[in-house]
Image (cartoon, rainbow, N blue to C red; front, side, top):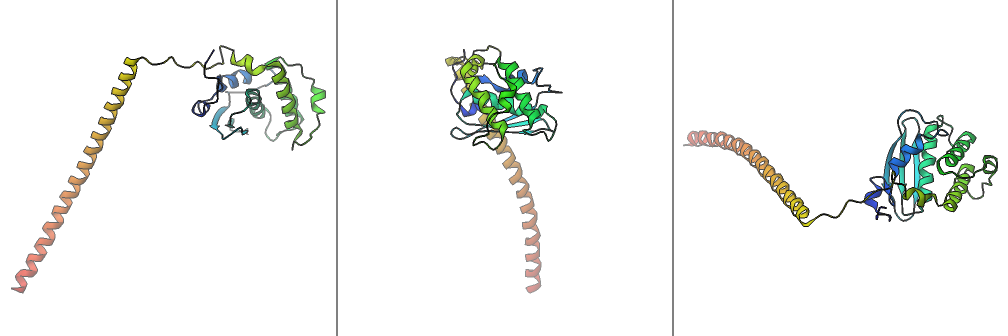
Length: 224
């Protein structure tokens, strides 16, 4: 199993969250029968957020999912990916209506093997949530935690991210040498560009000097 199961912002921006490749997860979820996804898997754009903040947005017609992921519960992140994918699979302007809720419940049931009763979830109290769909999300997340879905998916060889083995001393030396060579080439190219620029300016300056020297001599002759 991957040893990188913590929260690493630079990996999050690559789509790796706590050891799971979210893009591979999205590809799997998109193929669910209950998803009814069409065409290619929606594009995922992921940013690392501060603290534990987590949010998502789906541009349904363009099939683009944007995620802002802070250090939070893995099950919540997985459910968020599912939530945004369902948006892309539903008709435009469905938003968080009954069709959306029925589909995300069916997808969660199929993807994670959860025992979810659709009628019961559709009757979930909104409580402090602005939309009933968000309350349904929380019920699904609770069921995922109980079933330890996050841990199960992290152990899935198709989804987990394997960190690269440590470099040998020779590889480190080669990389450093290559970096130095690249830096030298970059500075050399810059020096050539600057030389060409100032040589061009020098030629222009010589022409101007010749021009104004001629004018000065002209007026000096007239004054003598």
